[in-house]
Length: 585
Image 1 (cartoon, rainbow, N blue to C red):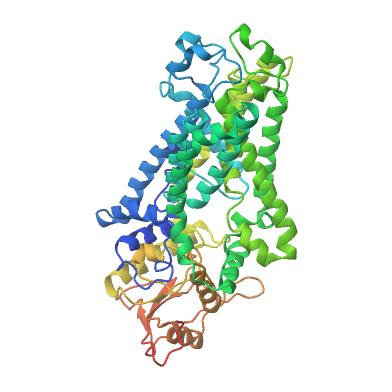
Image 2 (tube, helix red, strand yellow; image 1 turned 135 degrees about the horizontal axis):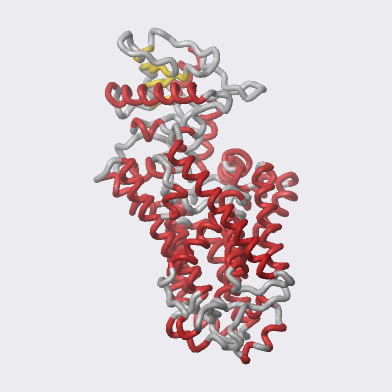
């Protein structure tokens, strides 16, 4: 319910037009056949295989809603398991609340007001995991750095994180077979996200069990070996398509593809020097808030029930007296932050000195997992402090907890009200609004242009050949979603394999020109003829919103005298035969 309230916007969301047209084409090759993006490599083939099959039986929008609900439910299951692994003990562990720190990862301490004989078992208490999820969403919304998110539209990383959260929960409870298997499934659905989670989980296992619990490497390997093999199988299944589709790509094209991704199309995710000031500010505030919570508890111990066997632990650092599952997850969060700082230093040094080399490294999303774990760590600390699970290093502990609780409540309510208003009052679905309207356009102008967009797309569906290639407006990303027709290139739909990325970039640069003020320039009759003959374009959807754009009347087939459309016109061409054209191979 929380995830629905937060992310239940109109279909499609920003990335859904990208993922779901690809998923539909995966099962039905006639869907926009001939489109460069749809015909490129299938890096997320597990998502396309399982979710794309819905499009064979249901309309595209309905398929997305089914996928959303399934994904949100799966994330909720993984998240709840992760929270319960830290704050709640299973029935079988009730007698172990007073063990020393040499126990299993599953050792946990109940909240101060709970009787150990009545400590709640897993999934019997929905409120704490829901409160933690709300706090986590606050951090994800306003404290992200690299633009990552988990709860939103339906795409491959959402279902991947559901498995990854469940895998971390199992590993934190010393269930390596289940834990690594779930991480393997997460890798299968989204190999980049799964890779960073698996690396940080391995670091946490080695630190908590080898260093703190003093297990021998031999025992540790015996305990985790088979699970690691299963995780490796999942990783191989997820990585193989991406590796195979670029296996024969020339090195120069791989380099150009990496630079296009890191410094142009995906710089807002991959290169911190390109992150916006707003992102840097949010990240800095969240980082400071997290460290402030740590400082409040740096000399404290996890609250206990007066068990004498834990008295010596009160003098140790609080992380050494924390539940083992919290220790594990805390190390995962610290490892993710450390890796992101390494990526930042690498970007600052090598993006200027050796950008080709830097792009080949930075394209693996070094900062993605930290965007998830830093809010996660902050929310766990916040909840533990407010509920008294963690003692405070202050003389006014009760007042501090009340103040923090009020702050947390204010932030959560503000977030949910803001998102609810955004989701219910959105004039244009986010996936269609993205890149469609100018910031200077009034609401009336945007709505009028959107109505014109829907009108021309309806006409295209009813009156044009499904197989003809289209040159479409630069300021849009939902043409395939609306019409099921192939496009020359669109900014949002960057392909996955290197050769297609290079071709995609070349097409964009050739088809759309900007002046020094970054204003889109109109297409002349000569420009249109050249593009039509080179790429065998049959139709042009002309953008009349571009200043100075004229219509070649001899090619116009829409709007006719019976229709009107102030924003778009459709032109039909008979391109030169392939033998006489200069079309790219």
